[in-house]
Length: 356
Figure (cartoon, rainbow, N blue to C red):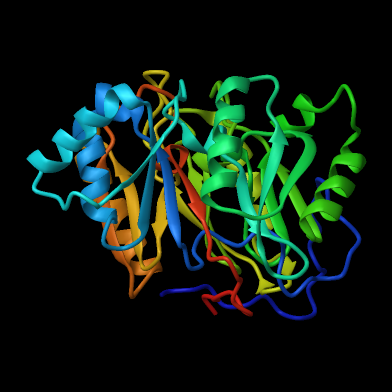
């Protein structure tokens, strides 16, 4: 992979302007990076099989041999799911279907965030989501705790799963909407302390959300490819100058940041135009062990799709990079990452991979 030369050691160390904590770098944080080994991908099947059957089939086809799939689905739609699997010529056991009724296709926003406790055992972190889909959260909690036994930790912080990224070595990224959502009970410093104490982190940055994008989720414009490598979206300034400037500023502040994994390198990846008011993202990817699923939009910008897939293949040698047509969902406010929840192994490996 092509990488820029390291900055000289005599340069002034850059600091995070938002939410940096005071702890020394930690060897491994409570939340692993999604580029680490995955045991299972959980996703909500109900709306997929009803309204987006081709996407359901495409997703299952490219992932079922790479990672275990657990699909949450209401009983009345299980038959349709089985028919789609059979018609596609897929094995009957390619998805482990679990009975449960959820109202949203966005699994990451009603599932727990999986991580590890101080003993290195897998656990589940539950953010405060009383502001949205509370019934889904209750249903998912019961299912997740039965299917993936382990400690459940309640986090008194309003947060959606798509707005929380970890490099696996103590650096957490959110958007600045976390500050707004929790302003009635926490100041910025208190949010930082809470994230530090619960997740064993030493650095947190709240990046400015995309201008006009309604979810405010960081996973629409940022992706960790390794503990020391961040891929950040790049917006054409003539398309959206406010978002372009915000992302450029974030890249400048984060590039070269000292982390427990070494200096962070930031590369940029283009974002599709949002002039039609819809926010499509190439950052909203799914890691399935050594496979990367990337959203593509062939009906919108096929040339950019090809360029982006080539970029990922350059950045991730040894990975199989597969484009998934997200045209059916590109106007729904989410992407592949939003559809799924990563479940790591029961015990964490001692080290996270690095790109250096």
